[in-house]
View 1: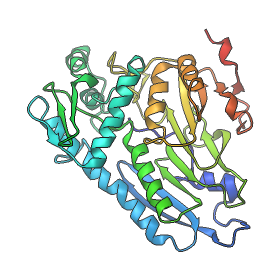
View 2: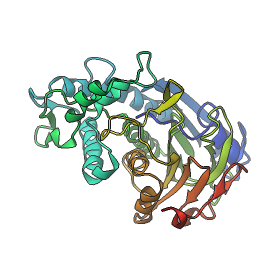
View 3: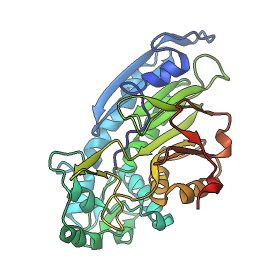
Length: 361
């Protein structure tokens, strides 16, 4: 699943606007640039941008931007020859040896599928996503017969790993992986690790405006957070509904409005439920996660899990987790925030109201 949910003009200009101005920053740190160094690339079907305030880090940024280009080649299911395509093509035939990064990526998706089966998350959803193909030229609402045909091919238990040979085998012929729900977040963290190892202390890694990591604090000062505008799910053309403070954290958003198919005046979201074969039918309009500490998929996997669970169960799941906070917007314009965001989230739109999760049945 591709997810674009934080509204950032182009990619991160809303982040930099909210944090410190659109192009020039007043910073008290002489080691930081007044005007950040920004570079971008379009790959993996999305716009990817790195913004760095540290001086003399042009090479580090260039190296970081090579990572998504590499992983697009390795993981795409829209071109023949990628490692994931080879796994899918050999389903029910033989295991396929893959690179270390792809192996760990698939394992991450498998672990989410295994840990949260009630959410509907499953990385073997490839044939279903291709059947709808929402966002692509051949998108369509499939027939019930077509859906019934692919549903039996979806089951994470069909994935077998061989650590010794670093190979992946789909035991059921016809089963296909789709890593779109986690690959951007995984790549984002590889980019962040690369930048930090090169000495970057202050910056933003943004993949498609939905998978973002803010490195360090805002250049305004050591205790000044980045301020991130959260997109209004009712107005995908531009307005924001709130602002979230973050520092050295993962920020990840999922929503129903970014890609959808309209048939007979009915909108079908790209967020597909592999248990039914149709888009998830619950009360969530958008989710924004704020995660501290380590998360290999930059919140991608968890946000998809929460989306599948719906508002109340998704919120309750986050409550049990350490270092994770969430903003959930439902279809009735209610906003639910976990307690840890009380002083970090500000509602900026009168259309919405902060609600109490305990009022939900």
